[in-house]
Length: 455
Image (tube, rainbow, N blue to C red):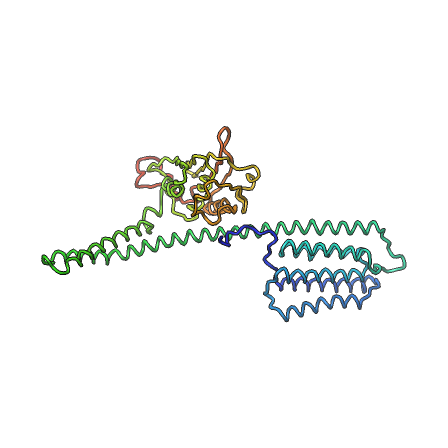
């Protein structure tokens, strides 16, 4: 399986940069020092400054050692980043033990390491850090030094209230951690799917470029080949009867003819001004449908095919996107797929419909998102050359992304009863596709929309 199209692996991570972790810890150290100074000097609360500053200095020392020993651009795996974040939780626990435990409002900082893990590390690491944070909060809730306070009347908080704080903190760790991980995981899935789309588009553009190079090579070789053919023809005319080299000249003539056939084949792939660079809508639909006609499903194209049809510039992304939608329709159809095209002076609409079961309710609202699939292909075994991304839920996403890049808007829905099957409607503004009418073919045969559309 191509790794570019690998399905999402829940619990995966892309690691955490050491530089990011070091900067965040320096920010924490600065905040802790500021809090200790303000509480002791401005508010006059009695604090065990020496033990507190020793705990903070240990974090600063760890940061300095990490900066010296490892390159800052290093990306930490879960096994390396997890223990560092666990250290931050334990360091916060030590400070809270010295300054009142759960009575200290800074106990909310237990959320920070769990949030960092949820956005950058695997789910399993985040769960372990969440458990450690909840356990540490419970420990300082049971055992901690008195809360520093000015004056003789120290605040006394009920045990039930402290238990409520621990429960609220534990629930916040679980809820916010899960939410942050889910958002980050969706972002990673979208990034992977977009990378797969870029790979598909690059492959199509590469094939298109190869076609162009082949046509250019055929054009350049045409002149010397014509010269060789002319020389061979003159040699045959001047050759005396029964010449010993007659067979060699005949072989040379046959090879020249074979080279000419090969060059004609290469030229038919694509040329800078060839008719295949721009094609009418019906020709485009025929090209898209042709690779899928041999799987026992009738593909019916409903496009007028008149000389006034719009002419579209050949676009690898458009061809691949439409082809992917047709492939999906053929996969799920029972016997027939209909492809219809209609246009106005301002828009072009292509509708792809099949007579299969249609979109299932659980995926209908998410069609077009990455890694959404409900495939159960009956003919998959017969399609040995199926794309590697089949069944991973990227087909619709890639098709939708490529077609939207050409200016299209897509609508996915089921056909109205009593008909069955799915219906996909693709709509382009004529300006988006640079649609044109063949002016030579349409003179005197109807209105010319190309002028009004600036094509």
